Length: 276
Length: 276
Figure 1: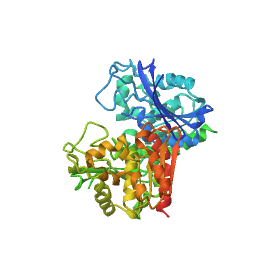
Figure 2 (figure 1 turned 120 degrees about the vertical axis):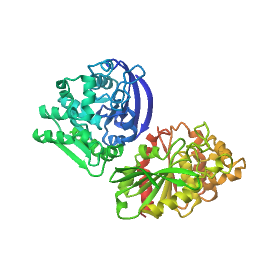
Figure 3 (figure 1 turned 180 degrees about the vertical axis):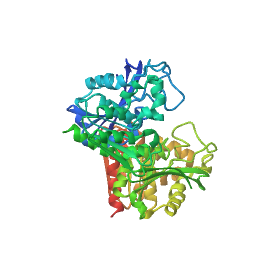
Figure 4 (figure 1 turned 90 degrees about the vertical axis):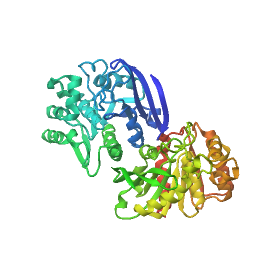
């Protein structure tokens, strides 16, 4: 593991580290905020998965999450959104390839070689983090923005018992039915839509739901509302009598200003579950 | 005035606007955060001046100031740090030319043509802002980071009665005696050091001080401490029996993580003065 940078922030440390990833076949970079409490005990963890075009860095510098994580004594993990590098498959489009891994294990060429974000985030990176840092594996929560909200919801529902709570900011809620999803699932997973279902939050909600609370914020002025399809997820949550809150936030768009505005609520929501 | 972007944030609006500047001879861009209160009344204002290499954008997206400004019902102004554009004089160094205006009116070629940041920030931009937006000219405060801390302190002391309070994050405190100052003042103002004195916070403190409270935060692990010279300003503040607090913050460096960490305190400090 290589230390890229460490800055004191809000009484703790905001670090950036890189490591060779076996499943992605390249070096991967992540951000980790450790609150002051981590100096003497293992602290609970909130995973933050980012959206299209983002690296580990965007949320780390723009979401204002450390202030609230410090207040609640919670660590934050900011993974990257795809494998990266000169030798890694890519596409000119902003929504495919590097910066757009969609949190799946690709099975199709040329993506399958490196695009193994599902295994990276659910196996390799947790294994590394929980052995290297004072993080409490028994107290995890997960959140994310847009494509990252999709990742957070699908991962949370796929590993019952692992996450105490899940939240999302403007998640891609029904990718199998959306422009943000169909194109990428076809490229990464192939044309057989049955392979897509485990990566669609709405379909997972219909099938099994989540055994904890869910908080979703959605900007009512989001310029991508038709691609996000929160209405499909809302319907599935209601039908499943899921413990959930979805808030339409008047006037807010898809930007980090939206994310930053409601970050305090999301961290407090997760802290409630993590310190239960 | 041209609207570049407007995003709802923390119940208010984070806008970015550009306008032709007469004194700088080019288009200038600034950020303006208006809290919800601005919908029905003129609100108090905090100016935030940025440091070397920054545009209007850095603090606007990385300092986390809007959360606290919204809490106190205060507007934030984020000006640029220099004139900009293809036809504007520049230098290869990060600390001279575009992104490094040092908040002075240049008198030397080639800078004098456009580098009139002092007049821009103390005359042209305030005139424009207070006529175009619901901002209360009678309730202003000013802050800044590094080169912007230098700008905030020198402007505040040069316009008695205009600002109720001034604060700074790791300001360039004694530029006449520093690598961050001597080079730029020579370029912009010429070799006659008597022309530099009105732009040196330590010398202004010795000469006249500030008729309100001052708050200064300085990271104790700041990698640029020898260029910032807070000790010179501290000595002058003590000799002048200035109403001031300077805090050395253990472990913090010069980054925006440091700025973001103490932003809540600075906004609360100014709000106390603005709502007095």
